[in-house]
Length: 91
Image 1 (cartoon, rainbow, N blue to C red):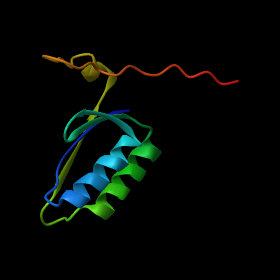
Image 2: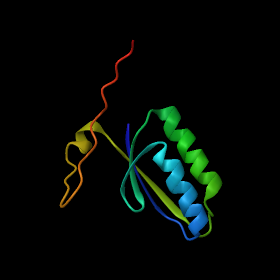
Image 3: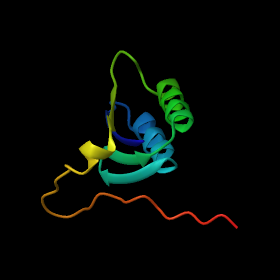
């Protein structure tokens, strides 16, 4: 699945921790926006890890799950591109 994750985190240290975590799951496309290609298991793992870091009273994280049809309709102005599926070769 293709997941866009955006966040608004008040505390600098927590924001940095979430950004580092998200880098291991996807690609940063803006300061507080990541695009991730994940299966259901990895998505739930990532979400649980984020939920352990954030302050539920002050912070917000949004997860937008896009279907293949929706992904074709992503439009970008300026720099950037939608990351394609990576070719995987199993030897």
